[in-house]
Image 1 (cartoon, rainbow, N blue to C red):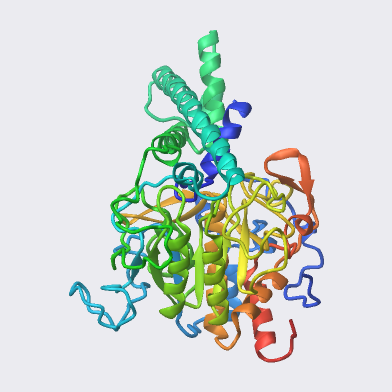
Image 2: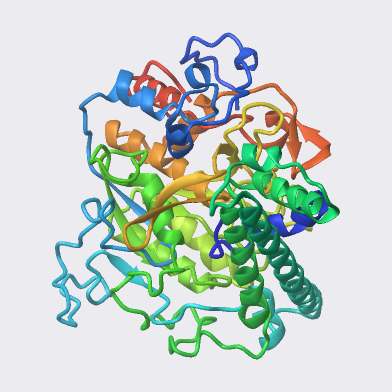
Length: 543
């Protein structure tokens, strides 16, 4: 879970925790019907949990992207052409042991001399650029609309309603989570004392014979903790993260009096005010981990004996710090996309989103610019568990206006899957939509890089998007003559198309098939995509 994607999966936890106390004729894989694949009934091993993004549905009964299979059977030792992938996100740990050798380096720039050596308009941008300066916490866009009276009266009224609702929910949630956390701590202490040990398993908890009502309640509460996390300790960490998330919402995101942008020194609502930021996109605090986690999914150094393997094997990661703890500014995103394009990126990953975008046209223009320069933009669908085709549930940026035609053919919007094949495969937090979501990919409990040479699991469509960006980078590396549009349609057309009904938004009363909730009706598959890419590049397959 992350606090940087502003509709985080952690918010979905808050809503559920207390209640629960285009087709193609190509056949790339020997699968008659993936719906005959047996459902995995055993728990994932530790190795499977850490690597499930890369596993194969048929051989592993886990809905990964067949990345390991692709390397074994299709890629082998072929490195291909190096591809620059821009991570438009929070700051990144540029010194991480699993990322330091895959960073993009601007060879025309001399570090630390305060001069724009390569004349690209940005000073000291050796590994990317920082559009946030030294700022970190920011308001939601809705809060800024209320504070600055942006837009018309209807927009301001809608924003005011959202801010007030979220603030009230944040205050209430802080109190609920703090009370729940204390109850879990008390139960954990009592069970440890009863067992005479500082650690215990789910089996040991279950074996306790509760002779009084207090122990019965302790068992029930901790059994609930084990149902959500690997241990009560991990569950308490989740609760603490939830408390921190809602505290940030109350103190920063929904606080009309807070001004986190002042330190940057620009006018964020003037697209021509571009003399701001600096050349250091390093994360500023340890909690600023989202960009590091995303980067690892795309391209963490493969087979180096450390941490994780990225999806792509020959990338240069360009770090663009433009997503704060709060809503991103349209100007930063628009300029960040243009920076990536102008400095050689062929794939841009955007694991961010918001429900208000007063200057959306700046971002639309930047996306069109990227399309004109043959650059693919991969975007996260968002984590509210809602149908984005509903006009009342917008998620910016997108690639169309009011469910109309696409503004450009270089955008892939990605929803999230869990590792549990079958009806529960769609992550309960993931947004969906036949018009607004293109494809789904692994996004539940994804293990990847964190600041200070650490590794952790995080949830979100923020994790699904870089999985697809990694596949796009693989294709562009192995088949560099393919266009961004071709790569997009290869990924969408080559995925696996399950026919089973999926639970939507965690609500068992709402179900839909993959074809009903996404444009492609598919889940991303690297193995299939590379086979199709080869066919397209050789002129044997027409898109």
